[in-house]
Image (cartoon, rainbow, N blue to C red; front, side):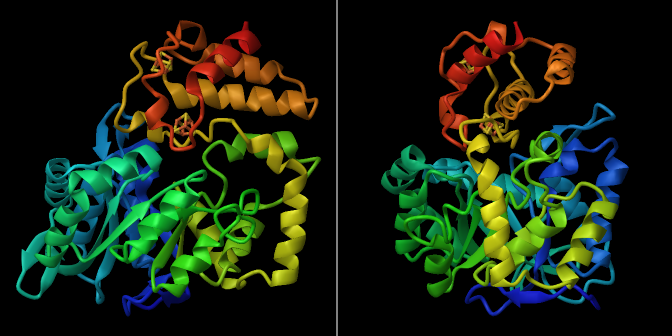
Length: 391
Ligand code: SF4
Ligand code: SF4
């Protein structure tokens, strides 16, 4: 497919992938299912050849319909008659034992509609390369994964041709686990967060894990380029302290030579078009990247210990008190930042009051959510803080 979007090597796989990819997590957050189909078709029209989805990216959209990102991605690819190269699909499961691994993988294969043929994996008439991830490995999970035999099972399934490449995603705070996982030599692709406000897994950390993986032929999918879903309203609060545009954030990350592709998490074609345009300007030169990182450092501390509204905790877990954790803690995060930068908090209080359902004051402090926060946040403590802040 003809495209202006530049391509980069996908680690040592011999594939070239579009340097901007579609993060299909947000398909569940749109107003209608039609918009979700339009979004996937749009990026394929633009020449994107990597789509990043997951078993857990399900949700109720604006029409009140439960949508599954994998199903939409599979349906779109099946419907296309103009794709002339294998599309790379990244999907992820929370199967951390051999049995759970098989169940999650098989469900993903069915939901995407993947068929295994003699000459590869297909969705309809279109060949795909399927990258299968362990979703969000963290210290406690990694220990279980290693000890349960899940890695051996994954290897068997990969050798059987049920998926093409094996990988994992991980978040901040798990550098040691990431390095240990890379050292197993089992993974060909990894997905890591990185942006101008937080480069701790890369050049600002004790080990540049982006370089470490790159040097070992591992492809890197970069997520959280825009610092998570909460950044849109948060950017307004900090605008007069630092004014860093999305365009600059994207080009900053493209300036990292170890990144294969950026999952920019667009929701609408216009957002993708803006990212495509920014990418065509080229990677940001190193001098400018350093200056931008210094600018970001003025406020980077504000983002510690607050909810990123990534919604990962709700993908496999339901709060026993029925609290929508990302929504409640998202407003709490903005309250914390607004106070730190001395801004009026009345709109944040009003937004919190308008949230439907139970709120922080109903948190039982049970801690059942703790293992599901990808950012190791002490959710009960943040709920207690939110209760005080919004009382
Ligand atoms: S600690 Fe609070 S937020 Fe977490 S599961 Fe228990 S009730 Fe829900
Ligand atoms: S509590 Fe943690 S996992 Fe849940 S939305 Fe916030 S940052 Fe994400």
